[in-house]
Image (cartoon, rainbow, N blue to C red):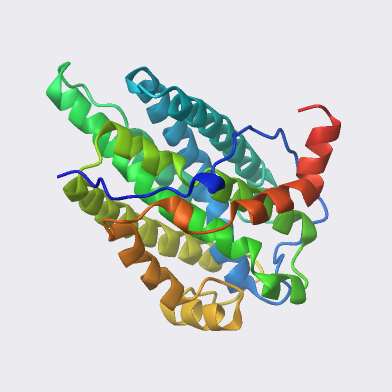
Length: 298
């Protein structure tokens, strides 16, 4: 059964382009949220998950391009691919800095690479129905994951508590540049899923798989960081601390995350109903990294 009731907010759609940003990490401390290693490392998990995850997005979408019958959607997907490729590179560039500070993420990133490249990678399937089924499953998974990257993007754009606590400006710019682009292209993955399939059962099934995988990988990554931080004697990550950090405003609240579930599963849902393209574009106009990329002509 297809979800035909989703109504996009047309004013929220803009042409997408990749911004060739770069960041310098030599002055960023290990705990870039001062005195708060838990918040630092919980957010740092992004640097471990996103390079492999967004390379996987790009790989799947390149396979999908020949199936797109709508010219405007094809243009959006091409813009999405460019932005996601840049996101992967930007987060990947943080990993050498972590190693220099005594946190080698290789044991964890090897598991993430296996998850995206092997478990969710291409399979040797006969041409036809089986191959298309696996491609559409991955398209639906990406739509579900993008619901949460857009959620996080909107959150970090509005996370004033990180500024009040003196979070490192370069790291905040990376997170907000990325978050703004996630808000900017938040409808593309869902629109592509609707265009190719749109089945409600598939949407629910792949949401459950994506949500479960993200929770598992994120808590595992936070635990990895806390346990291997060379400055902590008994570093631990817990759901209780996540909840308390949400109440302090340094991480998303548990309630906001739970409320995001029925929104995605509503038959009338469309990503353009959440977040603000105007806010995202305003940040991208002010972002130091994006501004430098414009001056360089990219």
